Amino acid sequence: MSNPQTSYEVRTASQADIELIRELCMQVWPQTYSSILTEEQLAYMLEWMYSPASLAQQMNEGATFLLLYQAQTPIGYASYQALQADHFKLHKLYVLPHVQGKGAGRIFLTDLLQRIKELGAHTLELQVNRYNKAVGFYHQMGFTIRETADIEIGNGFYMNDYIMQIAL
Image (cartoon, rainbow, N blue to C red; front, side, top):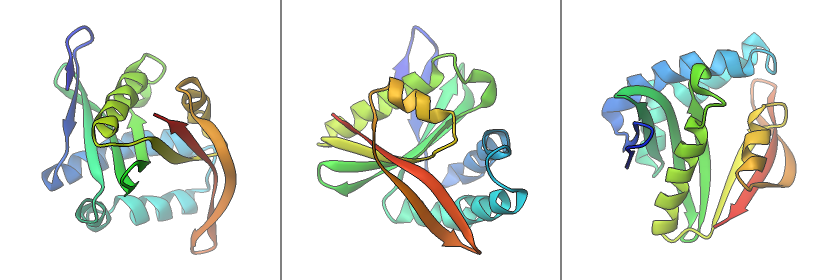
């Protein structure tokens, strides 16, 4: 879907876009998480979630990936998946640091919400690090904190997250 007023366009990604998703991730993750996670945990999580094999597996297991473009330039990525017919999970939503706070994330999430509503979603949940400034963004978008979770992810690392949700 494109938004002519802002020159943003959201496209569904495929396995051919895995390298682009990884490139975008490497521009976002270090800046987003370097003050929250140790270098070791950041490296572990990048390999765990963003290796080419991991991204391909996520797609093969039903995750839909989206790419956000501004004036034909990729500036963000997201992924979501149905957990039940009417309950979806937002796995990822990131925009490049230079467009954060300028409405790109709001446009991207609004587009994603419309897509899953059309698929029959009544609820969308997500996990976000408790210290990630995106918590405020999700609150502004109407999400509420359902619970606090410390999730063991291997190698002695934990994700210290809020599980947030929104009714659609």
